[in-house]
Length: 447
Image (cartoon, rainbow, N blue to C red):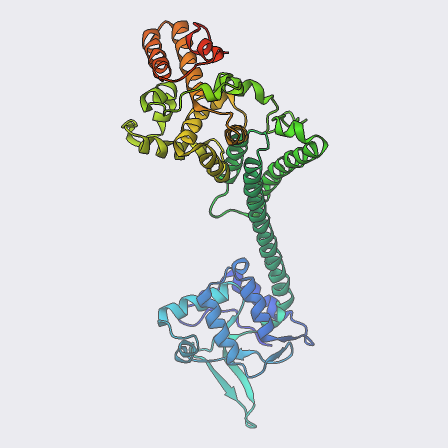
């Protein structure tokens, strides 16, 4: 097979080292080699990025291959096609001549075709007396045969990488879905763990996922997510085993012991936190001695000033409707599930449940599982052993004690507590228990 490695007479197509390399490869093609041109073309399409070819260039290569009459290409046959630019443009679905020339050059640079220029730069075939083609000038597609195995290996590598990328994306999707479901289950079932911290850890990991990233980056993030998945799973399984061993301990709020020192979960007793939030008065049997009237909104806000942080624009809370809206914002931020919130509203009433949420939000740094604690209070409310009054009184007493310690605002805090006490004492037909009276009137913290 003759090889032309010179430029055209007019110097319009300078020779490059890439072109020379392609011609050397084409000369080395085994004479007995046979390939299916469309199978090779599919491999080239799959390995397009690795080869440096463009979509438009492949459209032109598709057209060039169509000009060869045979589907099977042989290493010992003449593999030159000579279509005009007009013919190529028609078969390549139309493109400007300048675009055609640019992408033909891309095919040459990628080593997918070789130019076989005639002396005058035209493309044509010279036939002999018997009508057989003696010499053809145009585009040599012999690299399709010579590099068929290379194209196949490149395509398989690209397909393998795509598959690995798809698998790691699936791992991320499944792991994210499972973690969210397990967190929701832990909150709804009252599993005693710091679910707020778990959600923060989850968001921190997910926040590392960029829009476009190499597979290796996604692999590292997937491994980190799977580590969190294992922790959450272990906590839930430990809770289930503990509940099976001793259901009473589970109901009394004993927390899971986790051996991992860097775990997202915390182990602590729930009783101390409950005393801080409700002042112990709600743990007595004196709930029926508490006022039946509603707590004034002003007293609730004095006891739970953190609720004001949740108001957009800092405009304050002027009525119960705005207070309920703030409670709706506080609930998910503490990890309280919708089912636990709905159950509390049904058992306590919407306003009382919102006050309970406000009290928990005020002391959330001292309560490990806000959702589990709310469910415990809801259970007590169902049997008439819970009131929001002692919770608010305890918070006001804590505010007064803190003001005395710092020496600021003590007088205002005392006024707030006295106002709350007056609301209790003005109930005309009410007998206040000794425990409640001591909680309201003692200078120290209620007990």
